[in-house]
Length: 263
Image: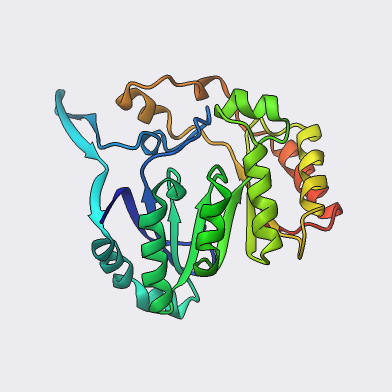
């Protein structure tokens, strides 16, 4: 069995507790117009053309994005950093793209990690069948779960999909008592509005079990050149920088509602 992976990053500290190895799966069902990993969207190996300038000369080179790997090949990479993850109470995070698109490969990796006592985190957009989430729940210690826009029509406009199944899946995981951190992409003009934030707070407070923490992810424009290299439509050029006062105001709204904010 092989899965399509587009990156493996070591010593990550923002994808769950402790020091972690983050495995990025290629392929995503959403098309968020601010996506900072556009190379992760298509579920296929792609070629990117890069340019390097040296002494006034231009050198072009094509790079392959994505590689097919077996469960054992990926697990071998995970074990390389085990001493660091154990010392820091870290582990492995499966991200993307969307790892739930390769559910059988993901489940096999989770089972290998659990058998070796490695802490597991799944970073997900929430857009997958409910059965897939219940299928991996027992092998997943933590879910990093995206909430973007609570209004369904706006969600369709900025991601290409309805949020209905995303909200239902979050309710399901909460009812199973899973540890969840909600990740909120804070995108000026698209998700940052006070109305959206208040609707999100109301939804979170109605979830069964303990209140999940929220990690706010402020928008950045560092991915602009990726769109050019991939020859993809770049809609993020029109997104303004994050207003720090808006960000602080949003943090206060969550805290006032009793929801903790992770840095």
